[in-house]
Length: 194
Image (cartoon, rainbow, N blue to C red; front, top):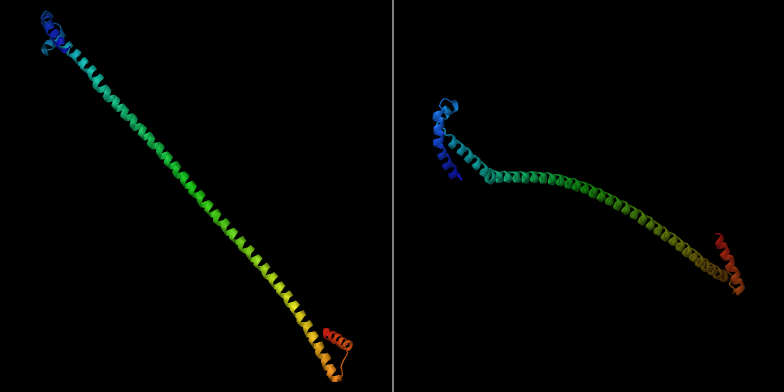
C-alpha cells in the first residue's frame, strides 16, 4: 500500500510543479518551493503516518495499555487483598487475645472453685473426724463407766464376802445361809452409801 502511495505522489509531482510555476505569486507555493515541500509527497507522508499510527495503536499500544491496565488491576486487587488480610489478621489477633482472656478467666474461676471445693471438703472431713472422735470418746466414757460399775459391783461382792468371812471367824461360829445373805446385803448397803 505504501508503494502505491509513493507511485501516486511521483505521478502528481510534475502536475504540481506546473501549477507552482503558474502561481508563483501565492505565499503557500513559495513556502513549499523554498522548503522543498511537495504536496503529493506531504499527503503521502500524512497517509503513511496515519497508517503507521493506526497499526501501532492497534497492535502495539493497545496490547501494551491492556497489559498495563491488567497489571494495575492485579496490583489494586493485591493491595485490596492485602488490606483484607490485614483486617482479618487483626480480627483474628483480637479474637485470639479475647480467647486468651476468656481462657485465663475460666482458669482462674476453675482454680477458685477447686480451692473452695477443697476448703469445703477439708471442713467437712474435719467435722466428720471431730464427730467420729466425739463418738469414740462418748463410747469410751460409756465403756469406762460400765467397767467402773462392774468393778465396783465385783469389789462390793468381794468385800461383802470378806466381811462375812471375817465376821464368821470373829464370831467363831458357822453362819447359816440366811445370815450370810443378810450380812452381805447389809455390807453392800453400807458400801453403797460410802
